[in-house]
Image (tube, rainbow, N blue to C red; front, side, top):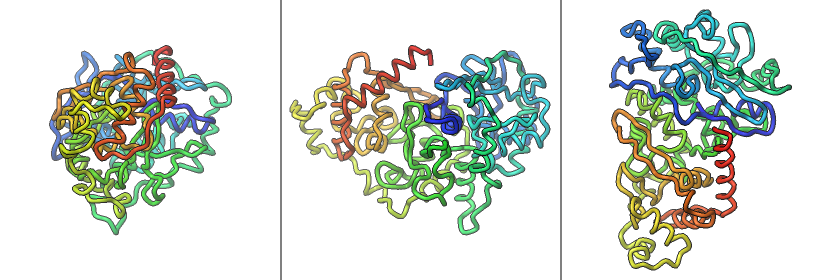
Length: 460
């Protein structure tokens, strides 16, 4: 669940809206997972949660966590699931809807069939087409049992809430919802997920979660000129989960391929990352911190392991073994020795020493699960440096999770570093300690700095 992005036409805009998020939403209550027990449903202030021990409600709440429904359907300082989150675009603003069981503003009047139609077909109770800001093309893969549990949760486990929200405001012709009918004919899956008999139950569970409720492809798969994902399953080839820029951040490839990719990640690394927001070599940043905090940390380790199994199967035949792909940078590394000897022949070396080495160290190794390593880090080596530039300019914080509650943060350096400084230090990092990524230009930095300034001025 994501923030809006710029697109070239109406279909691209509307589909791309499914890729966006927001920076500051109420964090749902946490609970220990395991077995059939799901985290306690988030309750509105001053209201008790209904039927907390109903197994179907509890199952539905767990599934709503997996879908990260709260992130898009809760505005900052708003009531949980009461909508009101604005998604601003050059064509107008889409506002998320109230999905509490309030009969007037929410979905209290929805039957199970109405609910299923909304998630599988993108149609409201009155027949109106929904915009794909709600990723119903992913949710269309859900099975009947999960839809029933989700419906039970939203009707019985979420407090009804009234909240005055702004209205969706798209300019003509984008305001004509019926245009989505043709788009749906082309891109809406015809049926729910069907298990692959040649694969293990764990693999199928991971595929079901990634393709369905997790809607990972909404951010991590590039889109065509029509706004559709270029690949929605592993059968669509290498483009599926191959990485994409979304709202000023680069969503990393989730394929088991050489850098950039998951080839250097063990399955346990993926589980730890989704559960805690950090591993021994990297940490969540940008919009992914919200995904971890609001969604993946609440999943069972069995489900996270299934996700890891599925992701590691994508492109795995060409991947190097993790142990061979990511050796530790030795103390004899030329970059390390040069920094320790005070030799700054490389552009960006002095900028790194003055601004970065206190946390990430002269050998680029950082401090495990505290300051991420920069040596052979898949995020550092990403083909698109957008996220790295934004991290240096703006900073970011790790998510707060039950198992890793310290939300450690990296400050932004945009106030003190010029475009040339940022380009130099990132080029230095992307070419040191075994990294072999392309350099960053001052023009790339300037473009992103300008976009951040424009966004800040607009109040986003």
